[in-house]
Image (tube, rainbow, N blue to C red; front, top):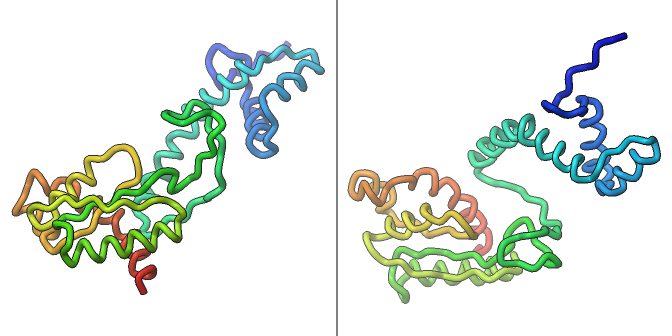
Length: 207
């Protein structure tokens, strides 16, 4: 008798071909797990949807996450990022009902931090761009003035945000912020790279 193949997921009966089949049926053909459960049952194979779901999560964590992390790193280095705007229903999304449709981007209002007081030239430009972007994106764009240090404070506040859609305008002092304002300048190089896409969009919008 041949030796049983080693499972691809420890302490399971999941072979690589079986997991590949489940992934293909689920994500290529959009077959719900409860339908897959019924399909296996017709072949006298008892695999619950909970088991299938656990296998998918384990496979994604073990093999797909390193690929995802690498793709994420490469994506953030791009000057322009294209996204699929198809809305999706996301269950158990924080602060949203299960029936809500969530867009890829922007899925909530966008805040633009301006490093100068309201009424100035930078504020006027930001508000013009915000209005045009709001019309194009179909989402609110809110201008939030954060004056001080001729814009590095606003840039620093942008970098600290971990949730939501936020960007900021940049003044000439950003270039010197790492030396003139060491605590403020942390992360401004990476943050500015991500602001570049909005700046390009804004230039096209105002033009």
